[in-house]
Length: 271
Image (cartoon, rainbow, N blue to C red):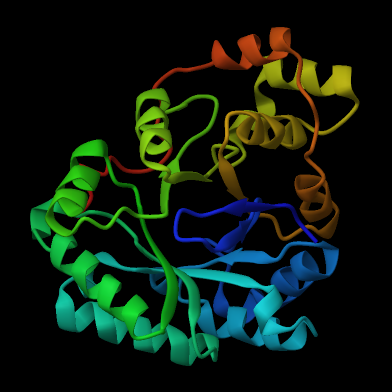
């Protein structure tokens, strides 16, 4: 069983997530079952991934009690707003075949739509109705967080953001820490591009482990919760076995890789 992180609402979340982005519904059951068998207890999906039914099937096939798993999904941009957000949640529950979600996130602020505050208010209501245990956001900048917090007094437990050695998000992570928000990293390996980074390969050679393990260990060191993806059981197992203690020299080398380079969209323009 994985280590866990205490969320600000009192719930616990496993400290490593297994992601299913771009895994088709008809192919997702096997890797999710493998991830659960190998030790993952935190599965991260989204309505826009269109694989919630397969994830739900994997959960049922895994043989693990539902209470021992942590399932996250997300409200897509075109489902923002009070009525649409509630329906999105109900649709996800039906596809996943679960009576509750461990965590529901707003996938993107989509500021041009002007609905993320209304969406946040409805998510608070969904939690009050017992359909969701924890609520958070994804891809929010500080100004987006300030908008929902100032309007509702409700601080998200998580902000899932693009974060990796090329995009370390230091200012935003410090803001999270000041409010007790967990920084969850999507694309923690920069969609695999960082595996070819010579500095990281050199550090991996020193510790006699994979480059991915070094990157994921760095995420843990700086307090991030990484959501990694693979369909290869060997790599799935390696990714979970990331509790490596990096020395200060290596941490400084990784810090020097900051480029401000995004792999995904800018949250201010994503609609």
